[in-house]
Image (cartoon, rainbow, N blue to C red; front, side, top):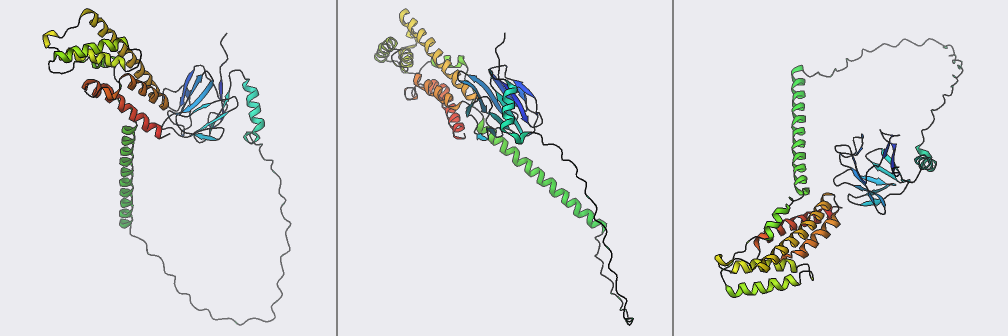
Length: 357
């Protein structure tokens, strides 16, 4: 038997009376595709909000760039996660309100309690027409008879009233056409300004591109350019072996191990750039372990960023910089420019979006 699921009841708005069951642990709501909870009110954003289940319960979260959302009358910023309780009211758009009903509660009981506490939401009865009595007619006053006939006054002729001049038909048409041209130019100007603003907002809000896992692996094993120096090569080899033994002591040691092996190979003459079998095994293991850690951390940060979970995204990008510190990659151009350059671009985007909350 399926476990009970929470419900949403539309209290007001064009969908009043409809119900939605939260059948999945993540459901998106909005006026556009792909919305799990479809709204019909025009003032609801195409991507308005999401409902998500956590261990503590169900939360509701407003999407970035969406219209306002209120829970129990309080407005919340995008990205703010609100833990819901049975009986909470979520308001979106101009007139749509939803009643949240917990999985273990009876929807009829919760709705009845809401209506009892909010009697103003009940439909008011139609007013009963009351007949209005017509007033009784009053007697008209009788004028007293005139005592004597008044002498007839000589009427003076009235001056003819000046009539307003009418505009000619051709002038009226010219004024009307000029007004239409003005309106058209005004509309074009508004559209152009709106498009420029939208393009600027989209450029500022767009997330930097995502790095592929293969790109990360290629960058971490890329060749370094150094002049042949056998002393430096042997020193780099000793450091690589030391860092390999202590690669789990600090997060950066794995990168230092891999970089030292790459330096050893760079300091050798082209025909001598090979490892002993044991060092070949350690080098490949270091590449595999560091690539996996960087890739997994980057993927977690990317997913959090796409879901507007800005603190989580920053936390994961900071962790990645502990595996590959910027201060140690200054002389490692591929790692510095490709991998860390992309990570820093994402961190700037995340910081900017957090500042808009």
